[in-house]
Each structure stands twice: as C-alpha cells, then as structure tokens.
Image (tube, rainbow, N blue to C red; front, side, top):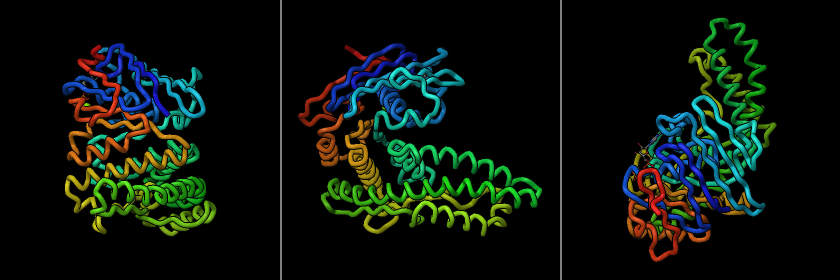
Length: 361
Ligand SMILES: Nc1ncnc2c1ncn2[C@@H]1O[C@H](COP(=O)(O)OP(=O)(O)OP(=O)(O)O)[C@@H](O)[C@H]1O
Ligand SMILES: [Mg+2]
C-alpha cells in the first residue's frame, strides 16, 4: 500500500501545500521546526483518525484560521482510496472516496500505517496506558470489531464508574449486573483480539530484535494477564470477576479490573525493560516492536502498511540505522530527518525539502 499524494490546507504551520510521494522511500528533510513532523502527523491522521501526538484536533488547525483540510490518495491491492478530513474547532468531517462517514470506525482500515518516533520509547518506559494505547491503535486498524467493542466498552465503563460513585448502594447493586453483562460481552472481544495480536507480535518482535542486535539479546513480549478460551467463556469469567469484586469497586469508586487495566510485559534477556533497560536497549526494543507491527500488518492485511519514521535516524547508532534502512526496502516509507544523507545509504529516495511550512522546490 502506498500514499500517492497529500494535500494540506491550514494544517499546523502549512497554509496550502501538496506532496507527491513515491512508493518507496520518501525523505522529508530540513532544519528544525519547519514542518516535517507536521506532515508525518497529517499522514497518520488520515490513516487512523487520530494524531500520534495529542488528542485535541483543535491544535491541528493553523493558528488564526478556522478550519484545516487534509486529504490523501493511496493505492492498495484493492484499488485506490481517497480520504479527506475537514477539521473545525468543534467538529470534523471525514470523507472516504467522497462519501461522508458517520462513524469513526470507518476511517480505519483504509490506509494501514505504522508510526515510529522517539516518543514511542514511552511504549517501554511509561506506564501501562501507553502500551494499551499501542495495542488499541494497532489492533483497531486491523479489526473493526475490536474498535467497535473498545468504543462501547469505554462508554459503559464510564457509566459504571459514575454509578459506583453513587451513595445509593441498593441502586448500585441492582444496576451493576445489567451493565456488567454488556460490559463483559465487549471485554471478551477486546481480550481475545489482544491475546491473538500479542501471540503474533511476540515471535515477530523477537525476530526483529535478534536482527537488530545480531542475536546478542532476546526480547520477550507477553500479555500481563493471560486470557484463554472463547468469547462466551471469557465473557462469563470476566463477569464473575466483576461480580466477586462489587465491594472493592464500590469502595474505590471505580472499576479496578478488566481490559482497561491490562498491560504487556516487555523483557530484555529476561529482565523487565521498563525498569532496567538502557536508552539504547529501549530504542532497539521499541524499534523491534514497530517493525514487528509492520510484519503483522503485512500478514493480516495482505500488504505492507505505510511506515512513518519521524526523526528516528538521529537516535540510532550507525549499524542500527543501516539495518533499519535495509528493513524498509519494499514498503513505502515516509521518513523525516534534518540531513537527507543520514537516511539514504546509497538508496534511491524521493527527497522533499521542507522550509517554513512549505515544500522547497
Ligand atoms: N496549529 C499550529 N499553527 C501554526 N503553527 C504550528 C501549529 N502547530 C505547530 N506549529 C508550528 O509548526 C512548526 C513546525 O513543527 P514540526 O514539529 O513539524 O517541526 P519539524 O520540522 O519536525 O522540526 P524538528 O526537526 O525540530 O523535529 C513549529 O514551529 C510549530 O510551532
Ligand atoms: Mg520533528
């Protein structure tokens, strides 16, 4: 899959700009604060409906303007797809092939993408939130039922948590079973899809990691909580777990168990990476996980995703840079860096120089 062109209007520091991408390596280069990350962000936004940087669409609109417009056309194995988004302060309108979509789920799965930036180190260093965010964004691109289940789960969970703050214990005890039945139905879909995803991610990430470290270290990824069994069985077990913990949840005022508390364990040579890995080890492990994500997309979707690498070359040592460069052969890569030569290693590339929110032609 590859993106052919991208148009930005009043998006971040861009007024009106067009990008033409090649199906191979595209290098966006230029000095700091010119708009390279902004362009990478726009690409990811059209693929997923969210910015990799923040959750507030408003910030995407160029300062002083009312509305940002972005659009891209991509070529995949099933033909061409065009996605556009018009972002205003309080609303947005997204079109896929010209048709207005009514649900956010409809953005996903049109253009597959994997995003990697130095911020992605948080995947290893930060708390479970970041790892769940990774799972959610990645699996949602591949599975619409997952995205739908996750949205519904989050809504019911919010209502459940509000109810738990109520003082009327009999109201709580009467209402919880009804909601929990719904909640666990969606929780089971989430748990099962995550288990499937981690089962694919784990060996793929170990393989990428062995490649990046010349086999010197091993990376192990596993689900913090193991869910086994079919959907009905999982749903029943999650329901029983919630029922057994009414007292705890009422005391705490929130739901203390369920997929919203899941985590994944990331170990390097058997040791917890979050607390013990060096900067370099963290970078390599994060990169291995992202390259594994590329591979899972290829296997599941039947074609490579668009790989967006924001500012990662400067963070890696020379051998890893070369390895990363060779791993990106055969798939469209949109890479940002300050010096184009850093990214190339003799490879052909579509080089795009960015200066002050414009392509320097
Ligand atoms: N909504 C906005 N309106 C106008 N300008 C914005 C907006 N959001 C961000 N900017 C500006 O866009 C500029 C370019 O940001 P960007 O992150 O793309 O830089 P970059 O080229 O990736 O730089 P670096 O090499 O430092 O990573 C920044 O100076 C930022 O202040
Ligand atoms: Mg940048």
